[in-house]
Image 1: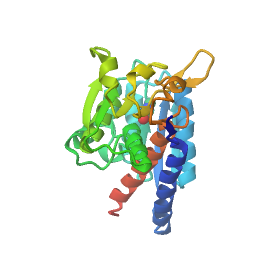
Image 2 (image 1 turned 180 degrees about the vertical axis):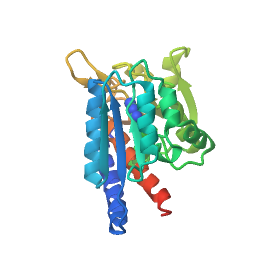
Image 3 (image 1 turned 120 degrees about the horizontal axis):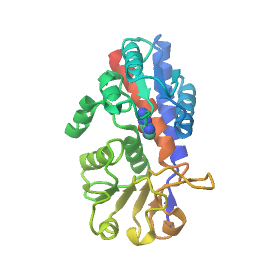
Length: 284
Ligand code: GUN
């Protein structure tokens, strides 16, 4: 039977540490600010942005929301990013993805100053992550690593399988596991023998975007099963990429959805924003 990895509790620990450090900076007259940009009316994005603003309030950061209409042009968005790049009150800039189809996401990501890129999506930060010399870690993979560390799950020498190869999760997830000496396999829609590969994983990370994709025959007895998925079912309920109930008996550890990786992503965003402020103010 699996032990449940409580992302809410672990993220509360991370946020408490961030708040402690933020309070110390405040005592020195340094305030910390995160700009959150949302374009259009994607309901899921609205929920994420609200949660990010709420987390800022919890740790004592200022948050500046820019909610732009769906028709916003790419040039208008780039002009806002440019303004935020030069705004001293803004330590981190987060442009919520996805953006409307008429806007080139890469152009926007490339416009964010790398030292304010708290998502770690800018190619300069991606490069730093690849080399293993980084200030910011991408929030979701960093959140997963923090969960593994705080739960005492060893990565060194372990077989880790990541399902999904997105720039936001799959690729950086594999890299962070590799930095911690795991043997990493990335699986995707063209992978042959997916079930067989997954069933050899000591740590299985599902970031596919398909509800209940991971079934018990893909899970090794006692494995840590980490669910990055956030799928909305027809009945409106949130559901991960893992068939949680079916995998519960076989897994050694499992993350629930909601209450698993999701809260960790936001906690790591707070950590990156703190890091940005510390770097700017030359604080170790
Ligand atoms: N959309 C889904 N996840 C994320 C994230 O981590 N950052 C941003 N900016 N947009 C997202």
